Image (cartoon, rainbow, N blue to C red; front, side, top):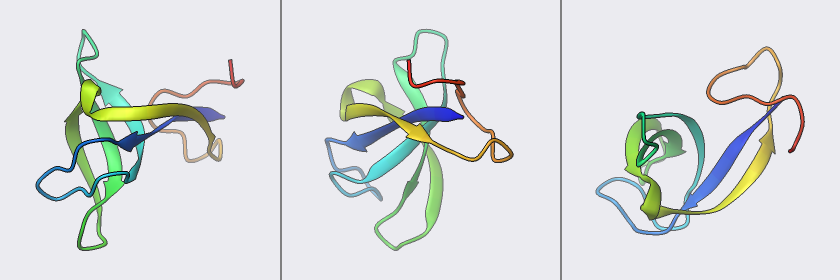
Length: 76
């Protein structure tokens, strides 16, 4: 199973710049995305991020039993 991974381009209150995050959802027009990332303190957090604050989108392989977010069978 594949999902979408991205980097934070703009530092936020508790997320550093260039932090890797996994996209697990979004609103209807996909302008705000629900992501999982590691905070400045080292904890795993889930938060809303503006889609324009993310960059370097790429496919990311996850275990099938993990299965959260937008999951696809192939990299396409």
